[in-house]
Amino acid sequence: MPRKSVKEQKHVCKPSLELPEETLYDLADLFKVFGDSTRLRILCALFDCEQCVQHIADELNMTHSAISHQLRFLKQNKLVKNRRQGKTVFYSLADEHVKRIFNQGLEHVKEEL
Image (tube, rainbow, N blue to C red; front, side, top):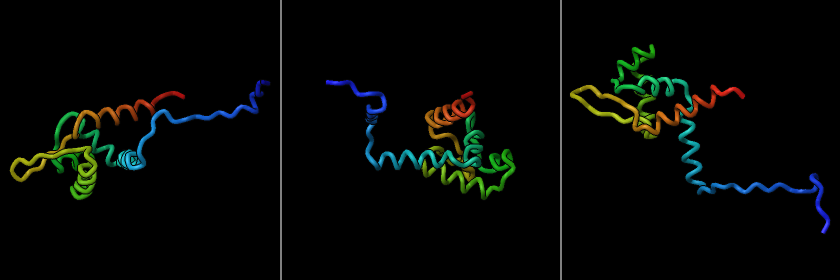
């Protein structure tokens, strides 16, 4: 049987990871959350310690309302958690995954191509 030339050979790349469509949508939604610089700044502010909304707002020079809105979105997407102490609500990163996702992205954008 004659061998095909390089031009005639078809390269078929089968994905090694096949995921349900719903899982892919959920993953896309997660990455959309990281697609906003304000939310990234908030995550950075929470890297080392929990903070209340006012402290985050002061640190980022933003309004309390703007920070609250973004924190609500981050909480809905399970990237931050909160705890109440009296009338004050403190926010922190939900878990170590959030730091790892952030750091992996940062490492990627800093790479020299």
